[in-house]
Image 1 (cartoon, rainbow, N blue to C red):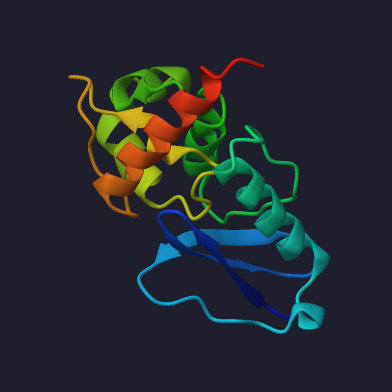
Image 2: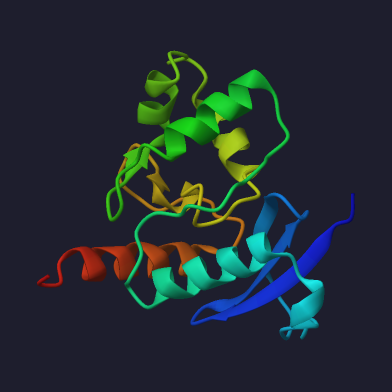
Length: 160
């Protein structure tokens, strides 16, 4: 089974999408120019991912529907699942996430798992903040985390 890549240009940099013909496995910011891929060589699931991400950045989408796959332990999957329960335009602390996965003493492990998330934006690790309410760690850079949170708040407060 082959692996495919597709770049999407966003207002805050290039996202590289990696996946198979069936699932998206990675959506990460890369510090390079966008690489053009031959559209006919890219599976539909990657194109759907790109289209939904573009809609997210336009403020037209708050959830995602394409199939994803991350490899990890049961604990990691519990944390990644908990991340997806943080509502759009809201935040939760690492401590709150640890409590959601019924491991209140595992705040550091939750933080480490958050950092291993390969599905940026879709598994919204950017919505996790420190217990003191401050922005902490984001693989894509704190400035992107701040931009994403501000973007979601603006979209959520627009009149429908």
